[in-house]
Image (cartoon, rainbow, N blue to C red; front, side, top):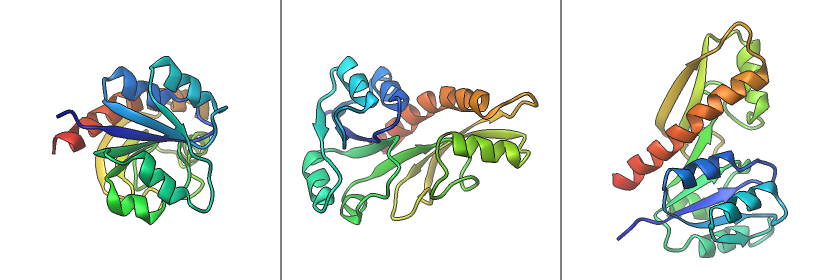
Length: 181
């Protein structure tokens, strides 16, 4: 029987990691987002992925639990909130972070903010990390990392593009690793 993966998306992202998972043939059974007008919804439609809108609110954890029932794994894609413990206790959850954790992680460290911090720190390499999600930001067990150089001429935007290229490959690889375990 094929494993089932649910994807929980944020409201502001472009959907590049969702697209990467779909293009890699990850068996996505549902995509859940809080806002059907978010740009990532178009990505779900492009790949014919079932979409379920679940706005944030009092019974959010319960509604997520219902949406992901039967899923073997949940992947976060641009989702920037802490998950209810009801979800992290019940499902294995993965996230991809655009830096080499444990460095440059935690609340507020997402997207271009991470790349600015990497450059400001004078790092010589960066990369991405797929990690298990728990009750804290970016502190779960590391599943897989990939590295790339930080070039002298890098801007936050050029570094972000280089890391994003790694993310698509590494996220799908990590998902397969967890599903096959």
